[in-house]
Image 1: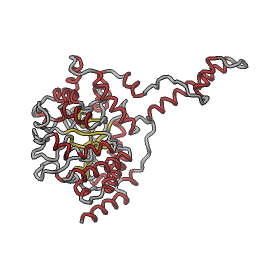
Image 2 (image 1 turned 90 degrees about the vertical axis):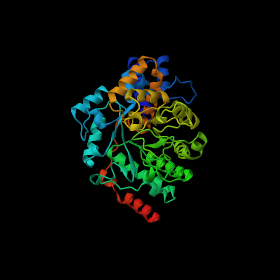
Image 3 (image 1 turned 180 degrees about the vertical axis):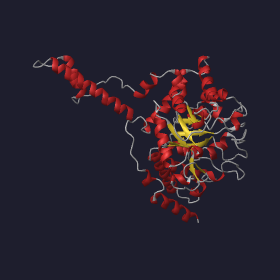
Image 4 (image 1 turned 135 degrees about the vertical axis):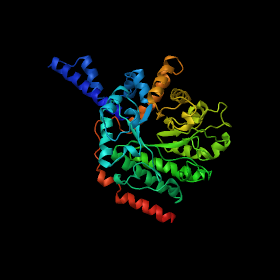
Length: 431
């Protein structure tokens, strides 16, 4: 781990300092037993020794946090939530004060937060600059119609095809290459998390929300595309988040608007809907986003999947063996907000097994609700610690705790000829 390397460097520096002190105090005298122990710590003699248990710097950081700070890490907010409900395109005192008081886990950008290249890059640097713990800076950048960056002409980014168009090539290598493009261009701007690719299998032609956002209607081919895009994106240092578990591909209504039901049983889900998610897990995806769909033939309590322990813990965590980040879909969507308070939604999502609570509005209601649930014994602090450690591990893997920022030439990366050529090849292939 990157943090562990940093910790070991400081440990060695400390030991070298101790050695110097011993030598300075005992000039001309044989090394005593204490000095010899220090020497052995710095210069191993090759013999196998029983070292003290390694100190995990992530655990040390977690242990130093207050409960309030830990709970704040569970939230990824839209930028209006850190500025009294007014959308932001640049840092201001209100947002800085908010991030100082609430060390949230991350933020999500939408089109109204993105003006041009310089503004976006500078804004992200400023957000990170006032945050004691590095933020997940996330976006929905799928390609096609869901492209907050690519569909803004002022961003000079590569305009990417939809998942459906990539799927029609029947060549997963193109999904990998588009994943690389997404990773390179997003990272160049300062983003480190992308809510993509879509892992839903589009088996319902009347689906009002997925449609061309899916790679196709055959689970095996969708699975290949999902795994390839995950690998390409994460190879470039951006966390992929596949969505929407347990599968939003066969719905006839939209969870943005209200309650949505999937009538399939568990056998059908395993055979169709879960195949791409399993492939994404095997590809090493860092995150999975939940769906707010209800599955009356799978769980008895009829809660949305996001709030169902049967779905999130028993099936996704245990049966599919996923130990990465589980992120809710936006909690302000109608399927949740029409039926639950933000406090209820946040508490139930955590109890279900989710790690990150995306966009509860108002944030403070969800935040205070979680704290109250812990105080009342409904949620344990150990449960919060589990999620914060998962968050820290992904941030560490992405290099967010590194001191030095990687210097990237935006003009060379955004909309490069190499990237445009890949898009041209895709359209030639499906013409």
